[in-house]
Amino acid sequence: MKTKILFILHRSPPAHGAAKVGDFIASSEKLKSKYDCKFITIKSSDTIGDIGKVSFKKFYLVIELFFKILYTILVFRPHKIYFTASVRGVAFYRDLLLYTTWKIYKKFKSCEVYYHYHTKGIMEFVKNDRNRKLTRYFLKDINLMLLSPLLEKDFQDVQTYKKVLYLSNGVEDSYSKKDFDKYISKKDFNKINVLYLSNMIKTKGYFEVLNLSNLHKDKSYHFHFAGGWQSEEDEKEFFKYIEDNSLENIVTFHGFINGKQKKELFEKSHIFLFPTRYKNEAFPLSVLEAFSYGLPVLATDEGSIPYIIDKKSGIVIDNVRDLNTAFEKMIEEYVNIDTANYCRKRYLENFSLGEFEENLVKVFR
Image (cartoon, rainbow, N blue to C red; front, side, top):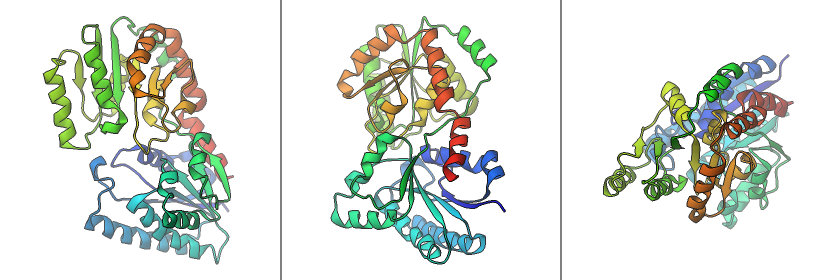
């Protein structure tokens, strides 16, 4: 009889990092071939802007989720439970409520529980004595699944868990080897296209990239932005800055894109910029996507970014004020076919969906 695993996880929409990983886990044929799997979606926000907001609808969805988990545990009787955990705020207290279902279940049946953290911020959250006690209770006797060793320090004040397992994210590959070689051999490295692709949240650094475009508007560079807006105010400010500084000819905003449009934008780009200071940034999938297209990356040292980017695949800065200097170095040293091939190789060996899927199966062994 196969080991039974209950997966309680985020799925799209909205399309944030944890949801994309959840989408892939739920569709993994290798996982389903090895284990008897059931999936429950954590549904709370319809858009990126809804995340963190409190509403009556969310309260209803939490109650619905609680009883769905309770019913599935009693009927399915899993040997293992996988849960996408939150680190702070209202979502943490929701998770604490859900935790009671498998806490009681474990009193009657042996069951391994895994919390997969896609974000960071526990260290800050547990500075409050009450939060620290509750988090220690929440983590007691479970297995942590972290995205990289750099994130383990976030849990140094709440070490009631059993053990730590590492599972780096992976992203979909758009090419066969033959197709990538054909694409990269035809790539024009003369006119530079710079790409920012992520949610349009200010702390993720899109405005720093916009400022950078203004510093280089006399060069033959084009700056591309893609992603969904968190607020209308940010959107208005973005386009006003473009108008005030006459950047219409060198800046293009593509909105939220996916599929063919996203592939085409990556293919025409040469450098990926991600100067994030987003407090929950842990393991950005957009950086992995850039590598899969052979794009070197310039980013800040947030979360696991220094674990993802090595010296041959990009530049990691510890201060956003160094962005322009690092960008000029990127233009001079990293925009070439050799770097593109190395970034692709780094993706294939470490951050492909195949690697992620294989490591996920191993974790549950």
